[in-house]
Each structure stands twice: as structure tokens, then as C-alpha cells.
Image (tube, rainbow, N blue to C red; front, top):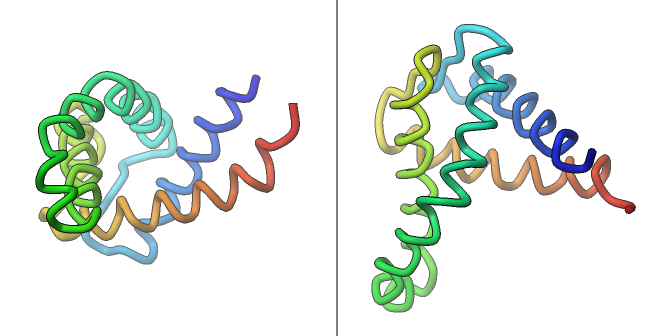
Length: 114
């Protein structure tokens, strides 16, 4: 149940962020739900591989490269989700930061407990 709540929180935050960040667009809320599912799968499968490969750069840049990896995961998710549009890497970068911060706050409020 906690996983479903977290996925819905990610979908809701992702759906409403384009009202602030104009370089990201979703065609519908169902597209945002699919994006949340694809993002979860990519975070489990692809992100650990990129994190290991990018570990030297992450250490050299004091963790900044981890933000780049997050943006790359967003761009990769946009390739898999047909109703999501990302204008550039920088929009994906800012979107990933805002999505991380807001979903962390919302998960702390709604998905904590059990």
C-alpha cells in the first residue's frame, strides 16, 4: 500500500510541476502515472548502474554529478513515456531537483507510518 501511495504522490507532483517549469509537459494525468511507474523501474534498474559508473565523477564534483544522473533518468523516462515532453537537459535537471524535493516532503507527510 505504501508503494502505491508513493507512486501516486510522484505522479501528482510530476503532473503539477509543469505549471511552474514550462519546459516539461504531460498530456494527461494518466501519462503522469505511467511516468511515475517508469521512473520507479528506472530508479531500481538503471540508476544503480549509472551511479556506480559515475562514482568517480560524483566524488570529484562533491555529489553534483548525482544530480546529473537524476536528470538523465528523467530524460530516459521521457523517451519511454509517449505523452511526456522535455524540452532540454536543463529542464530535466530542474525538474528532477524539484520532483525530488517535493516528493520527499509529500512522502514524509502522507506515506510515513507503517
